[in-house]
Length: 293
Image (cartoon, rainbow, N blue to C red):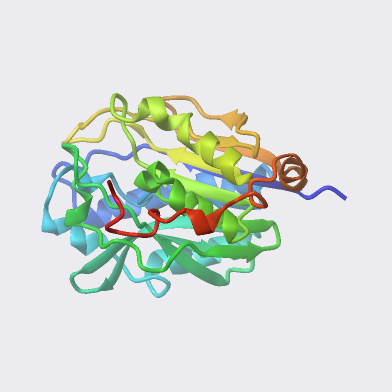
């Protein structure tokens, strides 16, 4: 019997943060996602991933300590608890990107992974933190991830997570493949004019090089008051051959659903023996922090 997993990704917009109570804004974003998660379940999805920092705007457009108050612990915070209830209700695995507070002064850009039973499986903390373009001041908010590249076993496949800027680094994508990932989700917040030309290039390349499915998620719209650019949506799924199989529009809130034939992974790997033919003993510079040049 074929191993087919119906998966969903959600892209949404955020209301203006100007002059708004941050708790109210966070609650509004959570409530916006509830019917979208329900739609994914109604359409038969067994796995669903939300966008980066789904419960708010992309606040890294400015540097202001007020946003620290929107962070919460994982798994003991209210958003994780709510998502555990929803996973149990919908019998659906949820990948939930949350602004995590590990302790006062230490915050991470994190995704919690919750099983269909509501069990908290673990979390991935974003490794690569940008601070190099106007409007992307992430080092002000996030500590680099320290939990490695975990792969989570579920009834619907082995799931890995890579977050936004991570996607520019092939090393972590390979780590997820070596860890046995079959579906890798990349929740993002990225705007037109900077990395859009890479959006449909890098992640299909990861899918090909590592022979797994990728679900790439981006938010939509212009976020006030900063308006650093258009979040251009176009969330998609691609297969181990790098083919985009389902894709959202550029400017609408959408739930994208695709059937992922996990048996294709073995089929592709039987043709392209990239894991067999690796030469890790020869990659002397990759893990050496002083190995550039």
